[in-house]
Length: 412
Ligand SMILES: Nc1nc2c(c(=O)[nH]1)N[C@H]1C(S)=C(S)[C@@H](COP(=O)(O)OP(=O)(O)OC[C@H]3O[C@@H](n4cnc5c(N)ncnc54)[C@H](O)[C@@H]3O)O[C@H]1N2
Ligand code: MOO
Ligand SMILES: [Mg+2]
Image (cartoon, rainbow, N blue to C red; front, side, top):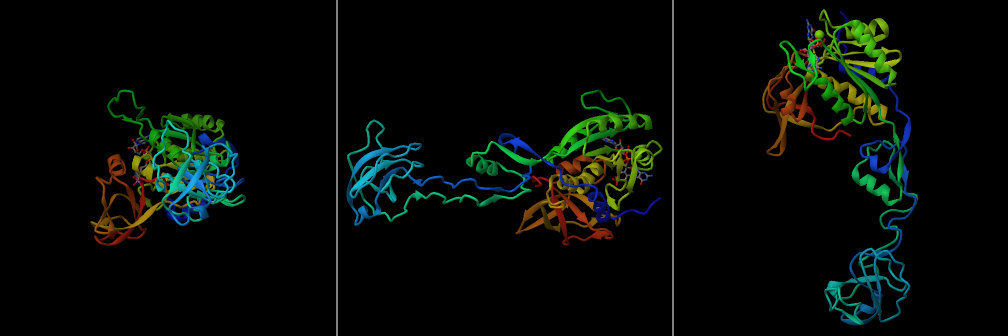
């Protein structure tokens, strides 16, 4: 049997097989979470015209000194219209928040600073107002370009778009964007014991939980499931399903189970016989039997069948692969240094323990979440982090520091 490859080396080998995918256009309405393929510079100034920051009166600031001063109101400026009036000394115009400042005005007096602190909805603007406070030029106005100048770089390539990013792009008037194409992932679950959720469970069988979990992970990290199927532990069935999966032109084929040393673990054999097996068995726990290779030139990652092992190997290997395909930094993920609340044992493999990290007395503390068996999903459900015990370390004592990867947050 070959030596176990270190997690670092295995990841290096995997990542060398992937490059960023090409760009495509998507509508802004569908761009949340997508990755910008090109940086964006502002095509216009924002705000595009100088406007009022308050409901009040546009004035010439000098006319309000010394307060109080009575000014003649010569018109009304709602938002959305170009004012046709011009202010001369001693004049004011009623103006609403967001409305264009009229010629001659250089400040706004909020309605609260006048002798008429409410607008009467049944009345046109008053003939005159008294400014009870003075204002300086520029007060309560938002000048053209205050937020953004034409040509200013606002979003870099590689930004995973958030709601506020989309808001800004919409304010430029964009309707579509160039984003990196979503990685297409084919998912294959293998196992004679698998029964799909919704069907009754005969003795000896289990529901297929990896299929749904891995599909959700693919989507969570920006990929698209282009093919999904379940096959029994039969080499011919596995080969046929590989062929069908490849018809969907995936960027990556992910299999679940059948990669260890069992008599009916055929997935690795199929990759080795019909394709190329570049890597098998990694020095990590859980997840040791991970396999990696290619099948008709398409990269294949064989995840171990135990659900926690499949999840952990997805986080360690598939997430950086998806990041690379999307043009994101491969290994960026939210993490935190924690203080252990209990001793954590390992067997010397790089361990990804399921942990509950909480904030207590000014620091992050971690303890193990439920039974750590690699078949036990409750540990992952209770956990909010994967706690890393480095390779070669058999025990981390209570109060020691360790790195934990957050599982709750959106990872990009
Ligand atoms: N003699 C040895 N036995 C095992 C070793 C070893 O080194 N020597 N490695 C163990 C480790 S570690 C793991 S992890 C598993 C990996 O096994 P496989 O990838 O070959 O997967 P299977 O044997 O097919 O299944 C393992 C386990 O996972 C359950 N499973 C499989 N698919 C699903 C699914 N879609 N949903 C839910 N659960 C699934 C399956 O029923 C088994 O319980 O091998 C160890 N053995
Ligand atoms: O590595 Mo296995 O994934 O320990 O259960
Ligand atoms: Mg097996």
